[in-house]
Image (cartoon, rainbow, N blue to C red):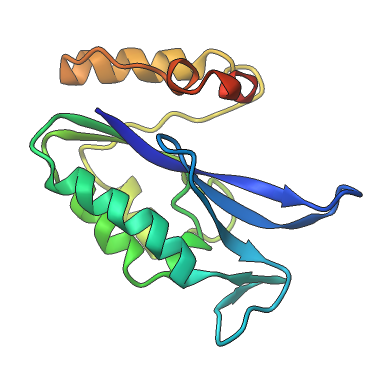
Length: 172
């Protein structure tokens, strides 16, 4: 079983970043993660962005909870575990629960620069985490390396994101 989400930039027609959206990698459903436009009601901010907690949580938390509750082996792709996502007080506990599940392999992206949020430090200090650093030189090969690592550790045959959603091939 494969599940997860990714975060994409949202840009205006003239190329200015206006926010970020979260996309369910299986269904294709999307929701805003953060926008430069102030929403109705209170919203935490990060820089110039307003984080859309309710909408983010309504898409991502059920995926995390379902993967943690499943009895089937699962690979869960979590892009990303960053400062915007961590504005949700419910997000990291759900990620930690998923990381603690023996049948789930989590492939996550973490920030690599600046002051790291405590939740990210917590993940990096786990004994059961394998870190792969992405660079311009290895980014084309890294998806295959990660799939091979997961298959070795979990004795699973894994479909890559590119196999599940061919339109995403350009991202690799």
